[in-house]
Image (cartoon, rainbow, N blue to C red):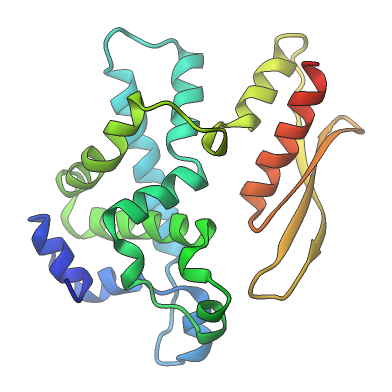
Length: 227
């Protein structure tokens, strides 16, 4: 399957707007080096995130036996976290179609969780806009439905949700996250994030995306608090 369109045809997913589908594959680093591309896939990622949230929420709501609100919230967060989305992308083989800049390619961007997760959401956004929710069902039933019953490794445990639930069991306060430092080259920055409760720092974490750094900060805080 040499193109994304070959892949869509193999899944029997219809398409009409080829330009929209191609845009879902375009990373910002590629746009910087190819001025003929006006846009990267970030807007489609935004749309795909909304589609993914709706689809996964509906799926969990209809499960039997019924899950509580707290159970649905925790499980959904695990199913749609960055690491999980990157793994869905790998299972589907979509990463081969990703358009990256030369620098990003050389530094391993094609295997980076944050980039693969964003691309997966962008592809969902484009497919939804082009052919609707029936096509989304084909993709997510293949990769997300089996993940519902699979044991979750520590990598996909949603520590942000676990920490918030722990905090709210004792008070009504909400934690917030602050980026305190960014290091490394522009094409592979490493973020350091602190999780705060009022003015108190509960934990810190690092990662090559803000989402991952926030998870590691929450993990640090959660493990300190439950000791």
